[in-house]
Image (tube, rainbow, N blue to C red; front, side):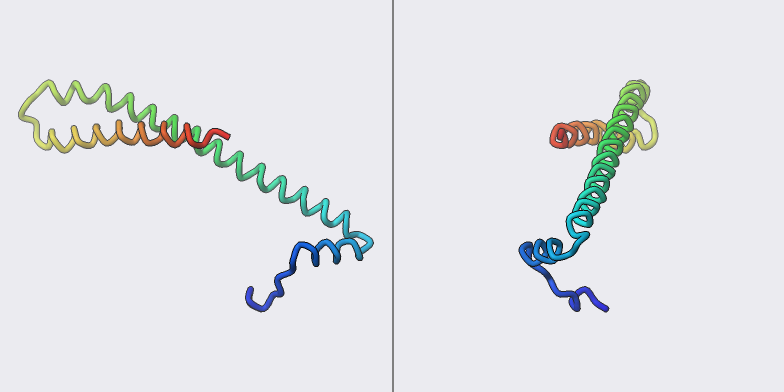
Length: 106
């Protein structure tokens, strides 16, 4: 059976079916409870993931801040410019994460 084989019901049709069934209200409340838990779990995941991303970005930024002066001490190090660009990208990443955190406040 494919998704296209299912008939799509309107809100009124669903209400009517639930009201005609003896257990309709209980069934509807049970589904609401399941959906509520699902939404809560998804929100919890997003909040924890955001916190972890921010902590990672902060730790990475501290590492970049301590590494940058060490790289600048010598002028003829191989691949110095590549490493400095990489450190700059860390700071850009931190700004990106901070901006996204401000947008995700619920």
